[in-house]
Image 1 (cartoon, helix red, strand yellow):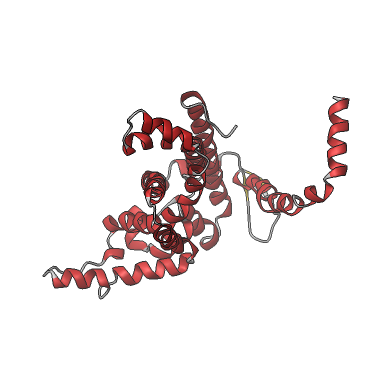
Image 2: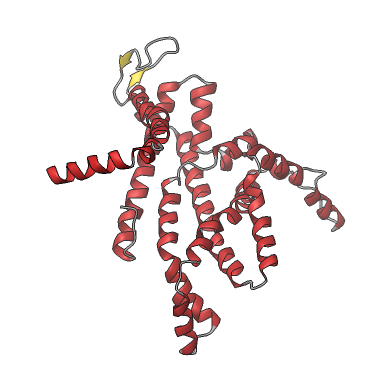
Length: 304
């Protein structure tokens, strides 16, 4: 143990300039991630604006029992699971597919052009993306203009609950898939070319090379990103949903994060919102730990 202490101190004295680079990120996480966890105490205490930041009186599981017996919460919880599941279903595998397709392009200029085009939506603000979606789906927007030219009646897409999930997931795919290919393209460059040569010598077709060489080569990256995506499963895009939804689409578009916003910020029911937020965080923790354990036992790759 003492030898390890001496090694650590020696490394600290030698590379102290590099360690100072970690100070600001650590402060960020302490101030904006760990310190706010103390506020979870108001999930078990009655909080009143202007009073103590840790609540006025202890109420135990009162607020937890309130949302567990609230039908509106369970509808919101179901919407969160459905939207999170659809987002994971489409936004996780499509970057892999796009990365494999881009990797097969041999013309460098065309490859760079397609990469740039697929990346660009990621750099747009969520507000701009929401505005584009509203314009595209408006009654006099391009989509309805096409429907009119086909002899169909215009559709008020953002006022109909059955269309909200399709619109949201489609916009997420358009905005995030291109950016998600970056890590996979980087992982593809680490695959040994000799493996492809050996596969070709064995008579493997291009599809066989992808299945037996490429996919196993990027599997650790894919598994790591899948676990991280599952960890944020419950935190479905708050900003975009808040900008796109309205009371007419609450039955399918209202999720936990937007429900928390209405209960906590708009209705000033902070203790009730804190209880729901704590429940959401615990569900996310269970999901990421479960995904990590399953991944480690099935494919031998995990975050920890």
